[in-house]
Amino acid sequence: MRSGQGSRVWQQLPPDVNRGATSDESKSESARRPGERSPFCYSPGQFFFEYLVVVSLKKKLGGDYEPKIIYQFPKRENLLRGQKEEEERLLQAIPLFCFPDGNHWAPLTEYTSETFSFVLTNVDGSRKIGYCRRLLPVGRGPRFPEVFCIISCLGCFGLFSKILDEVEKRRQISMAVIYPFMQGLRECPFPAPGKTVTIKSFIPDSGTELIELTRPLDSWLEHVEFQALLQRLSPENILWLFASAVLERRIIFVAEELSVLSQCIHAVAALLYPFSWAHTYIPVVPECLIDTVCCPTPFMVGVQKRCLEQVLDQPMEEVLLVDLCEGTFLRSVGDEGNILPAKLHTEMLTSLKTHNSNNNIQTSEQVNTHVSEAFIQFFVRTVGHYTSYLKWNKSGQGSFQEKAFCKAVTSKSCRKFVKRFVRTQMFSLFIQEAERSRITQEGYFQRKVTEYQEQKKKQRRNS
Image 1 (cartoon, rainbow, N blue to C red):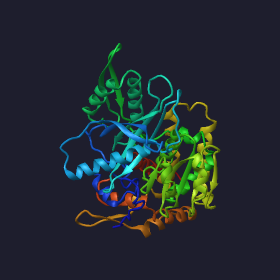
Image 2: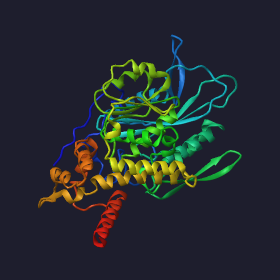
Image 3: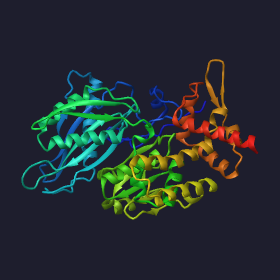
Image 4: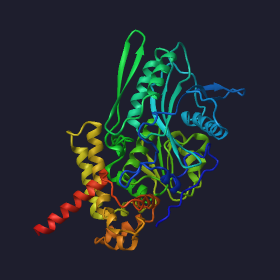
């Protein structure tokens, strides 16, 4: 049995924000299976969300502004002491991440609404996502934007973006119209993959609307818009970034817009499917916590461009610093171009370049499928043979034969990569999950592995 060592860092963050997932976390997720890993826990029939909060900027005595929660739904009563303390820690942390750009604000008359997200990790390793829509409330004269933030442990960014569209539409009418919609949503169970739920919602002067919310069939694409990444980085730079992520290095993204940071970091994390980033993960680091880029353990974080000089002044260890505005690397380790096996690197590069020159691929779903396929095939061909090296005892407990697994890779460059990859946290957690059950679940990754193995057998028969 392999053991995964959880990264327990940044104890000062409220409430223990964004620390790495541990093996304890994976044990609590009975729904997980090899090839279908997710860092978020949920089960069929679970609520869509835990809270909807509205965060606004309020003036302090000294004249500065600070984010405060001005609305919370639902209000929970009769909580046990431990539950109350957990809720207080959560509600204390949320405003900081709704306005990560600090108090650099003045009242506005115009503001284009922005969508972004953040992830909070509790002391037990469970994660909650904050889906945010920052907008300018209806009114006259200069005023501050406010953030509508939905807190959920369900990872489905596209779906919650649609929910926030409905919230924003109702906000233009009245706050009072938001409540019945969110109440109806809360009473609806979260749909199974590929399924749809319908919410009835009344809007003054419009009557009753039927809102359909469909959960994507492919779970690993629920979190992502690869187009955001492709628009900002060249195919070669995307592969350098992927190589750094797959070896769990320290990665900092820099952009001006919160939505760009959020989308691009989620996209990079999705490239790791069927594996999951198991370390510190903050799509937008609040300005007051900028010194956390000095953390010596792996992290994937986003920083706004105006904080770049502060970041560069920090005593950082080896890091990949990605400028999403210019599409360049401001700092790198230097070996990123040599991490991936040369042949597979070339094939993925060709696939990404084909996408860039293919005008027929237009929809978000088509882009996601095309891009993800190249990276899934990379893992199929490097580590897809893992099930052949799981040995089982009489009690049904599996044991992974790492040495034989690595030795089975015939390509010298692939074997060199695999020997490095098996030492990562993401591979350890993946194998731990596989060791729990002798029955291999037919997730998307495993289907791709089977297809590849059948193809190889056919080639051998015909040769």
